[in-house]
Length: 238
Image 1 (cartoon, rainbow, N blue to C red):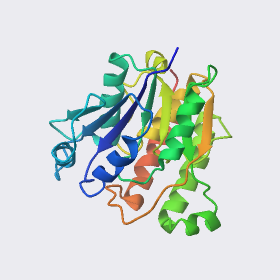
Image 2: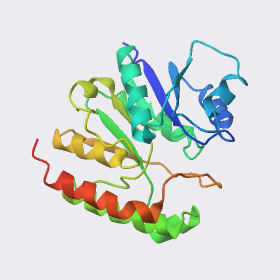
Image 3: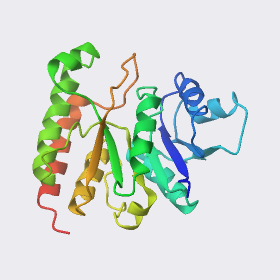
Image 4: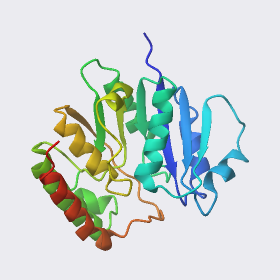
């Protein structure tokens, strides 16, 4: 039976990138693409909607308040799950991800024994500088990945800050999304809870495109809160 595939794009301050991302995705063999406008001040999704031909393949969600990247993603995931999609992917709307990596994740998730698959960057200094990754992000991503390996007891984890990941929809019946952090810690928190359920994580190399994107993440300001979150997860008992 053919797997039904849905891609979720949380959208915030991406007005100048969102049409480019749409044009890349609309050509792919994907059943549904859901753009979630996270109360974006630029009205990014409304901008997209007024500049494309509306089709049944595209769906829009407009949130009345800002939920954070995790909160917006969860809204999209729950919608896709309710609509009966078998595979759900999170794809960032700022044009940092390559569609070929998206298709690699879809191919992985079509396998019977893989339920969760994520992208990763090679975080050594040589590869990071080649992709023009800011130094503070190199240090932060490496640090958070090492900490995640300890809290999850999964020492094979790579680049837990990568925003490209997907899962079989059936996982949403197992992993409780209610208490997952809705901010930029979302991916790391989700990975932690996936590991707590002893679900194997598949990983594919996914090199991010850096091109003057506007990130709302304060790399320095997030270090201490993220460490607190990881400490809370370390002592998590459920």
